[in-house]
Length: 213
Image 1 (cartoon, rainbow, N blue to C red):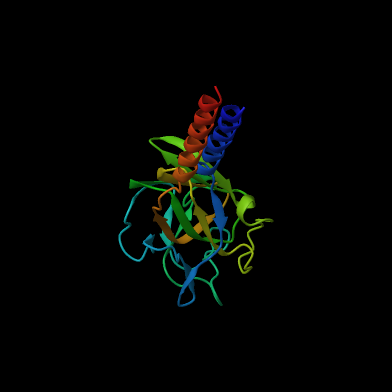
Image 2: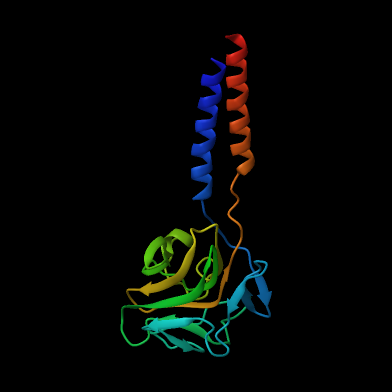
């Protein structure tokens, strides 16, 4: 009986570990750089677009400043719109995407997402395969593109993502705007102590069963 109970406990622990390892969370913490929102994630690499891009960008995008009616709007910060450079997708077409190759693997991602629209999509890839994807509505409902609202202009953090080495910004209309894009790596908290506990319980049950015999 003891070995049976211990076995069941071990199975539950293993299942819990599998679910725990694949979990991710979305948060909205940020740091301030003057008027601008930026990542406060320890050790993050942040693309500010103030010099040559630090990653490899391709597709339909532009690095811009200011706002152009009907095309793109600078993300709104603490008290006014972003006065620095930022990225907008698409650039030339009314629908398009930009791919960004990071050259390394990460599991944290953050961005100052401007005037979030429900037609904006952020997708993550590892070795060419999609591992996660988020639409504007999933992070800032109603995702109506309000250019001055603190509900649709915010810093969005994606924690504990599956490992990714590239991402894609897609928008089926004008536009997906972002600044201070950040990536980082944190150890995925594998509950190895639970595995040890499960093994110990199994061993204890086996020992009790053997003594009883």
